[in-house]
Length: 305
Image (cartoon, rainbow, N blue to C red; front, side, top):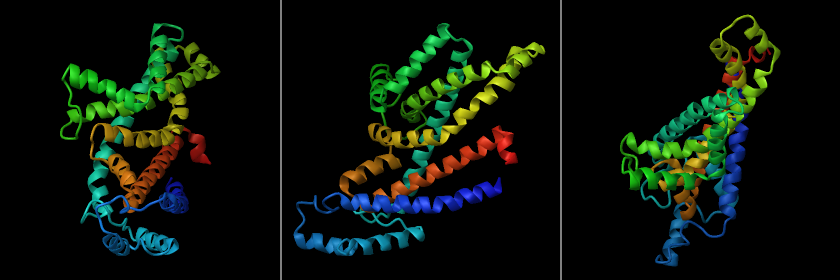
């Protein structure tokens, strides 16, 4: 297990370098600069600002300066948030996005896996039809539509939940449900298909023929072996939750990394874009590493290999 973690860490270094290089190139390809939109600033001041942040240097020099800072853990400074470094901004925003992501992913798993299992074990019945209707709706509707509906129903009409911001546990409910809806629906469909496949296996029929209760058969044999495909997609699913948080945080005015990323793109805040992208890349690598570890725990054959 320890060797697996070391290998994944070593493999992640070139991946992060590629992500940093591609992001650096993309933000420079877009015409204009961070201070070009400031029409009220005289050209002399814009030139001084570009010189202060080394934006007047050749692109390859800017690249090597950035990579050097990145290796030291310095993500640079923000061009729009005066006297604030990218490290400070992300240090404040990361816990918010992390809480939202953990709650949303937990809701997706707690909602999707049981729903898919119930649908499969009641194939063709009312529970199956209802579960597939909810999962199809969750996969089809985009996050901003789900968020708008939840705000209208629970915040405007019923007035039982706050509209936005991030001030109490009640403020977590609507954005977390919005962000978990689509991944939970996807997990429900995947779990249903996996359970239907496992139910037909010979060893499940053997367990039932030995007199093992239906509850133990489901928990020990069917569900455990059905979770393999679900665990496999948890890494990519984390990417869906993370990228989906961009829109959700902006809709609900949550001071997380997703909201800062959107404003940084609109403001062409180069270092903030790069820093946020790198943090998200690290999160995805860690999530995939965690999936590999859980996958080996579920499948003893992988541990032996």
